[in-house]
Figure 1 (cartoon, one colour):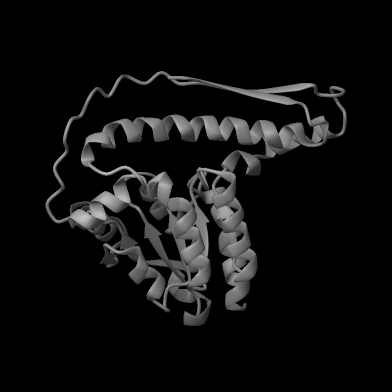
Figure 2 (cartoon, rainbow, N blue to C red):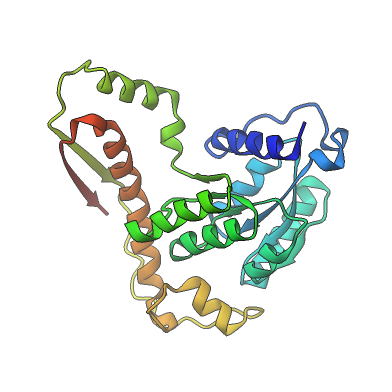
Length: 268
């Protein structure tokens, strides 16, 4: 089994594992040869990254060697959890650029704040690493196109985490629509209704101890906005954007050849 084929299997397996944590195989990871084992790093481990760790660790031909996050407090907590759960050590890194410089890392999963997704993917491709990136892939069409261009230019495998596109039931429904089962579709509508309590005005937020100021600002706060004052608002907006993004992407996919009018609503 070639290393390139192992990577392709890794991407296929991740599509299923990211949605539902599967039961580990009885074949231990050490049964594979060193050249067949994929070294992975998880970027961003205080949210979805925790699910990435769990999903990757059920794959027998993959080992997580590095966790990356600008907050050392978070990193040390994940490292302890990793050791307790898997009886394995994992290296810590606060700067994702050092992850990309590490030639021993084959793939990365990106669960950073949204504004980092596109650039993290492009850097991964430039560094010769395949990657899985959480939704949304980008904030705008330009960033998304640059991601695609990077994947093609550097011949990398990139998977964007819209798991519903991998759902058998949704794929069957979309195929039926494309086959004309309900006739011509003239309008598609995406609706997200998830009540969330108001997070309030968080005011100024101190930089966590163990985190460098530069990393905290650039990693946690979108480009063009300076100061921790806005952090609470941004978190809420990102949650809204993620769920609306999912609904609109599925609607566009289902619309396919019909080119109907699309609308979306977001209630929080």
